[in-house]
Image 1 (tube, helix red, strand yellow):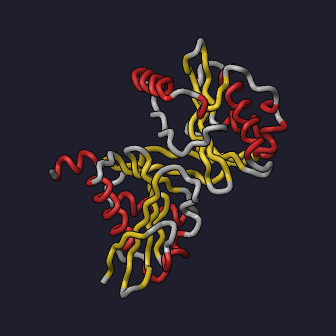
Image 2 (cartoon, one colour):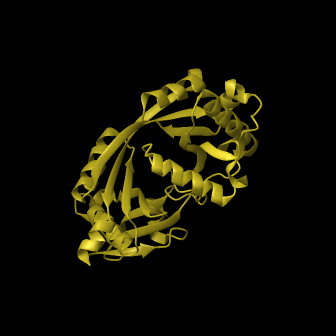
Image 3 (cartoon, rainbow, N blue to C red):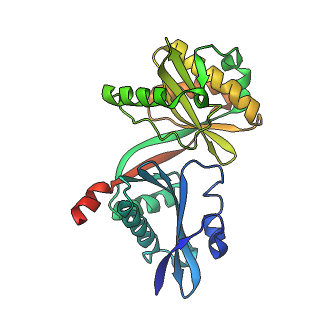
Amino acid sequence: MTTVVSIDPRHPGAYAPLLAGSLPADERGVPVALGCEEEGRARAALTALCVGEDVIIRRVSVDGTCRRRGMGTALVQALCEAAAASGARRAEAYVSLSEQEQEAACALFRACGFGEEESAPICTVPLSVLASGPLGGPAPRQAVPLENIPAYKLRAFQAAYARAGRGAELPALRGLLGQESMVWLENGEITGCVLFAPSGQDVELVWLYASGTQAVRGLLSAACRALSRSFPPETLVRAATLLPSETELMRRLGGGSFRQESEIRVFTRQLREEEEAAG
């Protein structure tokens, strides 16, 4: 008989091999981990992050001797039920694995009520290449570190962006790199920003929005200089590029060091509607 249990992600005990590397200490969001036990043995584990009103599934790991027995499904369903009960609106899962593993993971999330939203390649460029290229010049005065911006100005920008209906929602600000993420100020108001978050030993470019080439270049230049002061040259800057123009930007910046890794596939499931229906 299998049982789903809660795990302390910082002290996983017997689940450590299944959770290894999936919850870095500096990751943004509140970590959550569940395990599946059989006869007292750790057989499967799930790790996730609660960020704002979203719960983001980082990994579902099942012991090789226990696959195709519903353990992964049990963990995902248990997480979604608990998240909905605590007020989360949406569950997300990002799948970026080898082709064979990717298909198995996609089938798992579809079986658990997730729908595939989009897919995007993961692009990487070494920080040293960015620092020595066109972005290595002086940072413009309009680019200001995120941590130096008053909260009311950030809220005003978020509200204006949402009202404009420009597409992708702004990510939660918790856990971002405050000194390395930059905002663009025009007449004292925020008109754009570039947001970075730690991703293990690397850095993730989470979001970039600005109007005009000058602002885009200025934000990236200021961020690059700040990243170079905080991280070693071999650090990789990663980005999931949803649009061809984003991929081309990373390609131009990276030159011969640009790499396009396996595709990431995004799955989502609405939770608030389920909780309201159940109530």
